[in-house]
Amino acid sequence: MTKCVLHDWSDEQCLKLLKNCYNAIPDDGKVIVVDSIVSIVPETSATAKSAMGSDLVMLTQNPGGKERTRQEFLELAKGSGFSGVRFVCCVCGYWVMEFYK
Image (cartoon, rainbow, N blue to C red; front, side, top):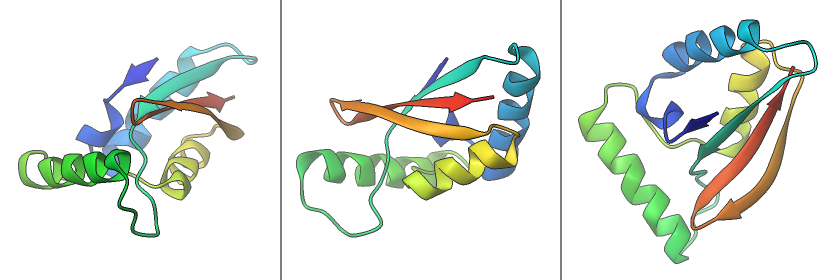
């Protein structure tokens, strides 16, 4: 399980981390990822504003770090070997995602 980890890193670093997770879990395993998701279409909800604010923090303090869209999480999962992603639920602005082997 990772919580608020992937947003700290570039896509390349995330792929490396997720590939290690993929190799460490059994064939029927999954990795649970908890992170913010930004919308492609601009939103004005409190959750969307919080995610965009966090994205700015990542931009200024973590080289390569960023908040990601659903599509970007799907691409990270596929790029690291996972067969699929399930977006389970959103709680207090954080999405619970399952990356399946």
